[in-house]
Image 1 (tube, rainbow, N blue to C red):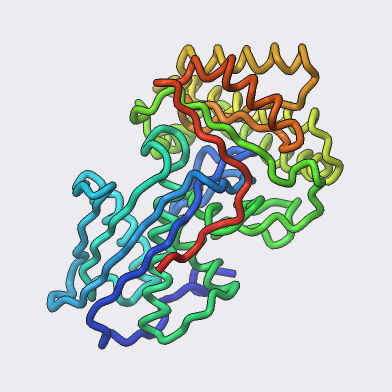
Image 2: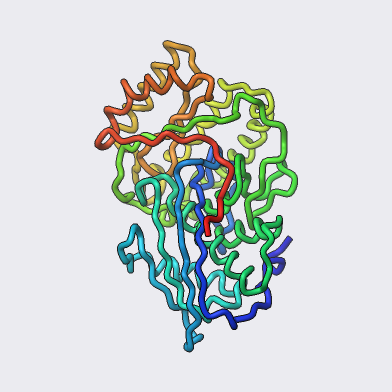
Length: 361
């Protein structure tokens, strides 16, 4: 499958206006994507859990306009105009213009809100850009008089979301999504995410993710800059190969339900991601002192109790505490009594594996 498969559909622009709303979840990568080629193509494969509660709700109101020579839109976050979002969305519109023939025909009012702090390392760009991509797909369907949420719709939505934020392509569906061409998953490719097609042990049903909000502020270094620093990174090629190897290791782990091996792999991946940041040039650190305090507390509790509690990190200071649902009560008590003290204002989010985006309007 190539980019041409997602070319713009012929549409009618006789519709004067309309409105569409989608909610799309964030996701947390187990095997990390860090480094990309041109056109948002990943340097290595990744696999993620789709989340359930951390999501973005986006409404796009579109109105036909006379001047069809340029993009015309405004962006609102939680009701406030966010002109600083416009450059990123303009870049996104330029990338997707070839796949939507109506982008310059309408004025778009984009209203969005998150159920979690923006720009704090919970992949707000993933949920945000996937929700916007889904809205554009629904508009295309309305203009082409088609209303089926078929496999093509999901693939194109993932393809379009990727052009806004690479990890956004993993937020369209759930519960395990693979992105990036590899030798493990049949049908895997660099253009869009695919559902993990192989057996998964019941240990992972309803897997829990309690997100500890260590730092709710904006990251000091954006993911875009971090990805670009991989181009000349001395360890980049070894890291890309490691991701392929770890994906091969993960397949039997998911099938057998070996939680010890699962925890070892995901924690190694998380620390490797941050090691790549710390060894970039210029180097940077997104973890905070309380991030490390939490990690050490988790290790000590796991050693003491034997409970299968592990962690992963995204590109930020916050800690995703991962554990099976059957051990949830005891582990959540530990989190509340021992870990929440290290969170900014004591804030955390209880989440779990989810199953993708939903249209609300």
